[in-house]
Length: 80
Image (tube, rainbow, N blue to C red):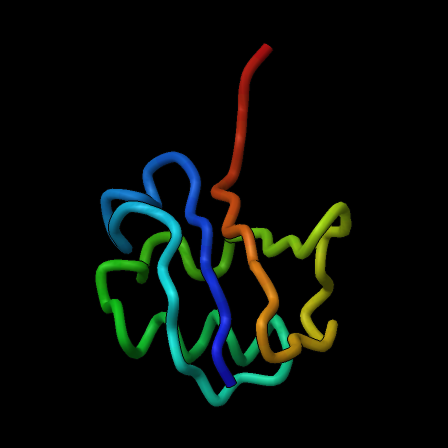
């Protein structure tokens, strides 16, 4: 399936400038992150803390991903 990734913050430095059009086998958010980790080993420090969103919704680990989706990858955010 083909999806478009939009990384934010420091993830741009790891994955490259958005949008990234990729052909993947993942069908849910959890397997998407696992597949990205295999393709981009520099994601190691971030993999367990990245949030995925599609449209206006955050995706849970088992949320389905569909062909043509635009998936935002959001690193942890802190502030005050």
